[in-house]
Image 1 (tube, rainbow, N blue to C red):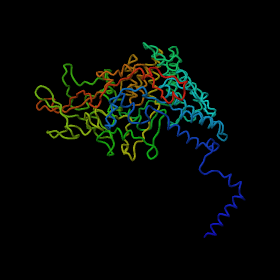
Image 2: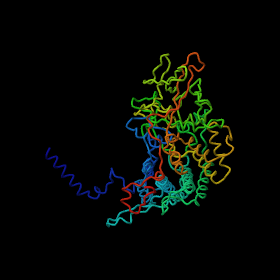
Image 3: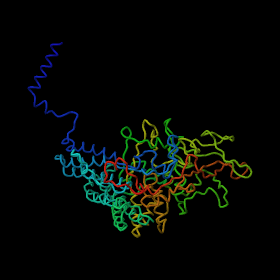
Image 4: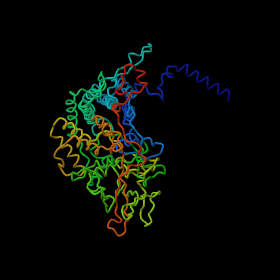
Length: 609
């Protein structure tokens, strides 16, 4: 054996010496060279997939928590997260500073230009356009949080000279970042047309949608910041956009929106049931409304939004939760179809409870988008009834005594429900604390609330409903009459009569955005760009927008009275909601991390920080 082993070694050495060139020139089986990567369409597409997956949202796509429960909802999940209900916006809230992704995109753009010799011109232009779209998208996500940021469009390579000054790029003016986004989209939109019809990659309409949104943000900041008693700005323009620029930005937003609306999209209208239709729009992954989405697939990449927010009694996993409870304020922002305000009628003019024959009756005649967004008493989910009942209201000869059970699903002494399996229950964990659950984007697919399967419905980056509202807002600000038609179209899809509005106001447009786009990561930024966030989340313990309120249903126990067996509703402030939301002036622009300031002395701080 020893001789054989030595012989093999000698043979190998002989082969190496005799086949020197062939041995060292063989292609690696584990390493991909730049020449291989940037000349193979499949490999380039794989690289792009990585970048698409890293595109940002406020706290991560489908991340339970973050913006969802601090805008129009409260946290009802585990106790260790209770700080979310004792929340005041920190100066770093919403911070995003991702030059790692910017660097990777810049490197890829330079590499494809240098190494791609086998790709067709069309392939090369498409891949470059997608990278430029994502880079602009990242810059938009930074500028809307941070104000002007350094505009870096090439690799910054250190020369090891000991002087890092050439790498220290100052912040651009706020408007310069928005201008960069617009010019990039204009330059690449036609190259992206090859992807038209693909909803999970950038295409021409995706570029236009980014124009529509970004230009609207720039316009409203230019207008409404200047109207503040003390406009928020820095001497170098890193924060603050001149008011004179507003009109041009509104026009750019409107132009982009109109081009999208004249394209191949239509408001989703595949279900005759208006409420079900609104839910289906984002749940089915079909139809003509979604322009650009982050996709998921069971067995490949899934999310746990359903696992974290399924109705309590419908959990398919022992550890699944019901972590987010929508607010009464949100529910009441959905108007009635007859045009009256959405305030729910829980009491009459004299202050007495109004008794309803069925729990759902108090919501009768509401904007159908409410059903597609929120689960409320008397409704169903996954074709099963949601059992929302806080307790019983026992008449004691002068008033009602409201009584709840410590155990969900327990019957009262009359053999009927005391507190429903789905609550609501005050100061409880993993059950609604407000009387409402989230429906929007909670998947009804089998096993979607289990850890093993999870959910695969997509996340909408851009959809036509937003574009209609962008167009309406821009047209309204420009004094254009077509604004009214855009809003009425959105409302008609929600069940309102045709031409339900005869005139528009800012408040109407803003409320339409609140109800149409609820839980889609818009409201926080909308209130900031309109410069009213500090007025809405004012820290007041009596403000129904700053404080998350709930609405609890009770079954009436009053033998011999017509109201016996009916339902009344009580407004409550959940115990777990501990402190009113308080948005300070410093929160209009997130603070820049100290390590960034330390590494680049050319970076100036944001106002109030």
